[in-house]
Length: 246
Image 1 (cartoon, rainbow, N blue to C red):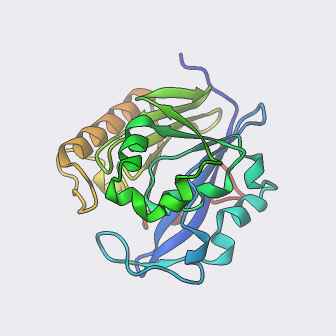
Image 2 (tube, rainbow, N blue to C red):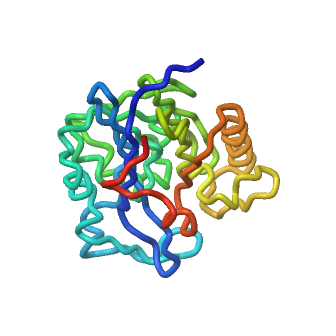
Image 3 (cartoon, rainbow, N blue to C red):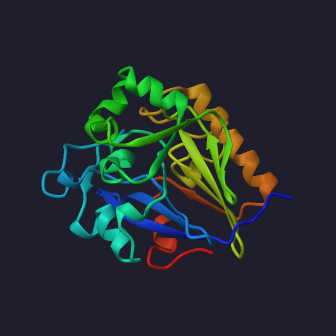
């Protein structure tokens, strides 16, 4: 049996895409031995006062308030970016990597494939490049599925972008929780054969394969909670920080 770490999982609202109320989330995993592990960092701070034009396939408008900024969300649970030990970078899209430059004390964990294609100029990653391509950031490039810490597993789920990764968190009371991120952005897309392929999904066959992979993991591990990356219907039903799952 895989080892279960006694951890807490916090969900942060880091912005919205309007008018549909599509969430831009981030996550904080706190282990019993005091490791603080972030997953993604939200949109750049400058978007609060100067939001970009419409984003994504549905061309939705970014809405970010001061309280949505990752620094302020962390502060509500008594943390600062310097307190983060690991930052899991699921991919370099601007709504996931827009504040990486704040986490100079953390080890940033990214799939090697995604890091290499982004460094080589992969177009999707360039919008936030000033935030992720910096000499003061400390990266660990990983390949494929790995256990980052006991109770925290990274799952390579290419398709949305090359080298996208999802996260499986093992909680003592809630059981395993799957953070699907953008591999399966809504619950309605969990069927690999019938799911919608969005215009911002880079590769259809890989997207379907990664969807199938996550569904198989969820079934095998007895996952009762899959948190989707941009699900406007699911998001209001979840516990948001300072509440947590344990």
